[in-house]
Image 1 (cartoon, rainbow, N blue to C red):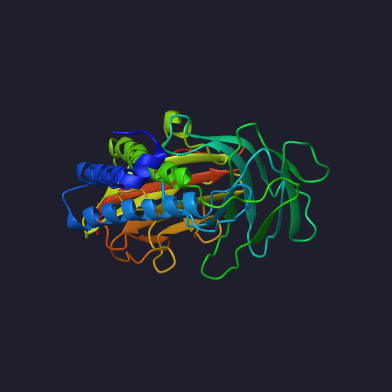
Image 2: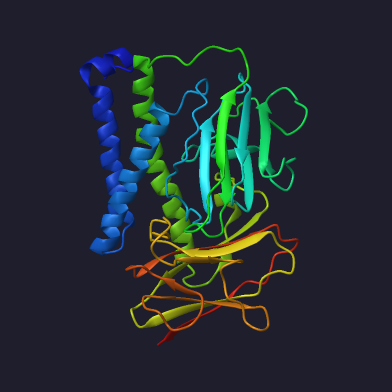
Length: 357
């Protein structure tokens, strides 16, 4: 078998190799799914979503010379319902200006990264800034992304920076307008290039490797959480080392499995000082639920607190008649994520209980 991209393209081997790798990713779904057709179907959907996302990202949004801002993101690692994600491919050879308006967003976290999920290096944070640190003109901002220092709002690109990732906090997604952005290049470098045949071969190879690697990576997370069902614990640092996100966030996770007549109750004691917190549930594949149609998460603004300031959250298939009900949305099992952002000290671990109705 030739390694020459032209030979592999002409013979169809590049496409065949890609399909073979997807078949192997399908085997991973079978190996990691519970014996339940519902979870199995969601696993294959997870695989299809990842494949679609990474093909589009690599083929249509991958040229850093084009400065294409993407506002879609895959459901990976219990993606946060309160976060609206955006991003672009960058290169340290170019300079960029990001402009935006916060609209109803409560906070922005803007990071530049190198590496990638599903690779040995992982996703490495090269720089990060939030709206607490940006100079704003009302709700409008401008931020320069470059190797060379720039006056005003500036985020330095590292020698291997390849991506911009933005997470904005929108506390009431059904009612509020997310922030708007525009990314442009401000240098005199070359224009984007047409598709090169060898690039297509490289994309098929990378996506074919990345998709099963990400399934493996986050199913390792799930298996770790499932070892301590219902117990909410800080995530193992080894997982975050290759999936670096917001440095201001404390991440805690759990795994739950409930019968229709059971209620999983989580009691939180929020810290005195914080910027934001939320608790969400998601499926076995660590995807968020359909949070635009089901109540599957609460945050510090939407949660109802008790007289003593604690918050009791009730996770169940049917409404238990209490505040802070999270609907399992037809699922019997899945993951849970709790995020504390901007807390000076880690708050106490939540108390949990599982009861029959």
